[in-house]
Image (cartoon, rainbow, N blue to C red):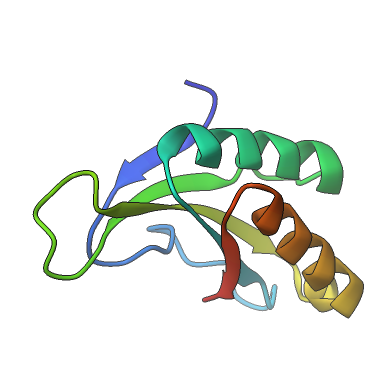
Length: 105
């Protein structure tokens, strides 16, 4: 499996915090299924030349017991310089291409 996948219903962020002083921001591509999340993560690496492979996390919806009722998150850690509005628009467009949306964490 090419991506770091974690199943989690509580907290979508990576276990390790960003190093102090980096000002990194986490962007979440919220997607409908695992295959889509894996494809979007690979596309994000290719398009944005990410230095770190995005983490893929399964996020169960509150109150749902059915495994079908889950969202898949692609966690992208970006440096403070990546807060550029052009980068945000590009991430939003990528999420939309895969029937998802972008959130900040």
